[in-house]
Each structure stands twice: as structure tokens, then as C-alpha cells.
Length: 383
Ligand SMILES: Cc1ncc(COP(=O)(O)O)c(C=O)c1O
Image (cartoon, helix red, strand yellow):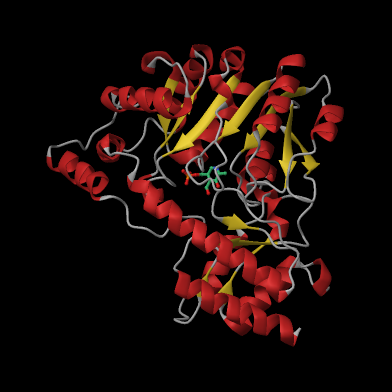
């Protein structure tokens, strides 16, 4: 038989799925592995979806999305992100933030082009880059997970097409300061690059830090692709709805790509998203308060147990260092789930600079977090 796709075969199977497989069937396992919020999807989103199905919304949707939804997204972008868009030209709906990443890659890059990103970073960026023949240039983050702007600057070459940022970040929990945003934007402008800004965690930000959308800077709009999704704000990862904001030229390319690959997104779910966007976003205030308590608890406990740990500034992840324990991240997480029933994600899946780290998601109840920290503490004592 002839050889199957090298690019796809070279991608490792998701370690997160592997962990779930190990955990399945064991009732006592606590998962700190999953990247989705634990609160229920708001009722209006669910009802909107159900009503749409009952009303016969069961056929193809317009490729770019239902106009009423795009108009609401336009308003949201203006109000929350300071973006001046036209829903007819600058917004396209897609299948979650994940699909938004492939749309960005499909529309911007030619094989051999280089994409600069800080590492550790979200796992899909690396594999999707290779699927599109893009050379991902990983710049190791500073020890507090801030981007190393100087090294980013020095790695820009003639082949560099874009810089990718994800703030607040998965897996580090880092959120860029205004100064860092502006330094990166300056690099983009000086070197005639594009900026891909993945903002799916924009609402999960702590300590009075403010999220910034680079596309809100006038000179950046034409060269920024902004990625967002319904998934994290509305705890609706299964709706599979995301959206991209960019220049008309880029969105037109994305529409073509989407047409031939996905042919639009789930039609009825879009009506659920419409109802979700009509909600007052203050519904999230109490939820964020809870996430903040969890963040501080997990940070304090990990420090107490003896991990090297950086206090996260956003998202719902923390990335402790296991350097002092003389064990690889893979071995740590496999042993941890087998011996103590706690699922943690090994750092090595998030790029080349995190085999000495773990990713912990604190999107679970305080009771479970307390028990998990207790088990982790026992595990470390027995190491
Ligand atoms: C940084 C980042 N971008 C994009 C996504 C994809 O989001 P979605 O579930 O909407 O596809 C995720 C999911 O965890 C993520 O962490």
C-alpha cells in the first residue's frame, strides 16, 4: 500500500485524549486536564438552539453565518473590544476557535512561510502549522511566561509572515500587559507582518488586568486576524461556534476555504449563540469570582507542596515546574493518574520548552481541587 499522509501521521495523537482513556471507567479520578469551564451553559443559549430546531432550522446555514448573529457579534466587538467592523465584510463564523485557527492559517500562509509564537503554547498551533506547510518558530518564554520580545525581534526573517499571540494564554495562564501588546504590535508594523490574536479566553482575566484586542488600534486592523469563540465565555464548547474578525480581503478568502471544507457551521446552534449574546455579560461576574478563588487556592497549594510556580494572570490554567523532581512530564502525569487518580496534562505537548512542566486546569469545583492537591502532595512525598 502507498504511504499515507506524512504530515498528519507525524502529529502525535492527543495526549489529553490518552489521559481520558486511562481515566475512563475509574470513578475516583479527578480530572484537572480538561480545557473547558465547568459551569452550565446558560439557559437562553440552550433554548435558542432547541427552538431553532423546532422551527425547522435544520438545513445549511449561510457560509459566513446567520446575519442576525453576525450583527450581534459586530455590536459585541464594538462594545467589548473597541473594534470597528462591518458584519458584512469583516466577520465570519466558524466551527469553534479551533476552526478559526485553520482559517487564519489557510488564508495567510504559503508553504515555507514562517510563523513566530511564544512557547509553551496551545498545542493545535504546532500541528496545524505543519499541516499547512508553515514553519513554526518557537520563542521560549521568559521564566514568568512573559514573551521574550528581544528574541522574537531577532528571529524575524524574510520568510516571517506573522506573529501569533494568545492572551490570556493556554497553557501558561499568562496575559500580556499593555506594554507587551504594544511592543509586539510595533514589531508587526515595522516588519510588515500579520498578527494572529487568539482571544478565546478574553473574559478570564484577573487582578484588574485589562484584555486588549490589537485590532482596535487603527493601524493594526488591516493586518490582524482576531480569533474568538462562544466556547469559553458561555461554557459551550460543544456548540462548536467561533468567529474570526479581519479585513474584507482576508475574510473573503476564509469564506472560500470554509465553503469547500466545512460548508458553514451548525445552523440551529447559531440561534443559541444569538440568545447568549443578548444576555447581559454581567452573568459572568460571579463565575469569574469563583475562578479567581480557585486560581489563588491552586497557586498557593502548589507553592506549598514545593512546585516552582508562576501566578497565572488569565485563562484557567496553571503551569507548575517539576524540574526539582527529576521526572519527565509524561512519566509524572502517567504515574499520577495510575497511582493517585488525578489527570494532569504533561507539559511536553505544548512545544519544545515545557517537558519540565505540567498543565493543570482549575476549571473544576473547589472540593475536587482540594482533594486533587492533597493527592498531589502525597505523590510528591512518595517520589
Ligand atoms: C488558546 C485556544 N485557542 C483556541 C481553542 C479552541 O477553542 P474551541 O473549543 O472553540 O475550538 C482553545 C481550546 O482550548 C484554546 O485553548
